[in-house]
Length: 400
Image 1 (cartoon, rainbow, N blue to C red):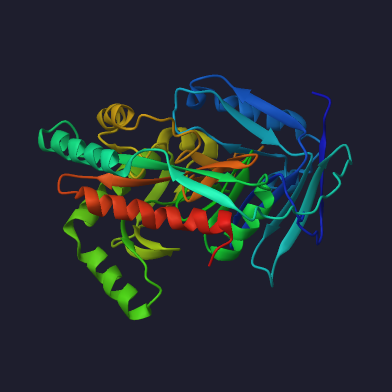
Image 2 (cartoon, rainbow, N blue to C red):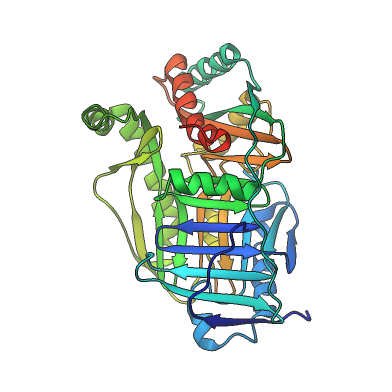
């Protein structure tokens, strides 16, 4: 491969309109241009080692010091399909700008190929008018929830996650970078992402590997947020006390812990979940963190082992996904798939691709899902999807 990458440190302004981006409050990467696309055959989890091989092949001009620091050697971004049986694409940008630490105490770096810097562009205006329509009839969707609870009662599975889709059509094309800016402004503590038209701000960390430390923060169990502090505190207390939501949450924690344990010298989960605000809703969340054993796995190996967690698929996984394929007539696309970045050393951060939109010109697909368990009420689950839709719709329509 003829391309070589080099990194320089020092303050750098992130591009006003990036082509690729994944950001957290203390670690952000922005990419412009396309140096390489790495195509993974189906099923994508079986071929993630191809990405590591490509990144290693183009990083030999980077210093050992840069290669040892997360995100400073060449990085590949990906928004992976929810369906594990599909192919996938990773994108290495022509120019990468990175920042670690908060805004007041940040370290910056820029990685480019062959010294070429891509010209920046300005954000395009957001559309002024758009139509929003449900793809599925809400009443029919509630019937699917009822069918799922009947299957659970019959012992076919414990939980299945069912999603709804909205179609958004605007009068002018969306600029994904402008939509990203809306998401970041509205959800500064979330994991923001923009990869090939899939853009959003996820509250849920699937897995991060930075050096020898691995971390995940699974979420399952949801209640609304009203904006009234006292009312939201009461709702949060009810969520923590809910046997239904705590049981749903524990299924996900146990699966994530067990999937990561084999790579770790130690691994711990918080003894009790916390409640994390995520725009119009709040979730039960538990941090799982540990130290990896040597040889260190790539973050992609852990992504392949974790996806889909019970929070977006169900439990047991095989039975839940089979039911999901029958009860969800459409294709989820990138929704609820892993979205994030990986570098040549195997460091990376991947979120669960929720609270976002798939943008193609003036059209956008928006999804929201719920975990259906034995005592789920279809009307309540429908209301939960509406609350979750609100975050993405507000960013697309720049509404308050």
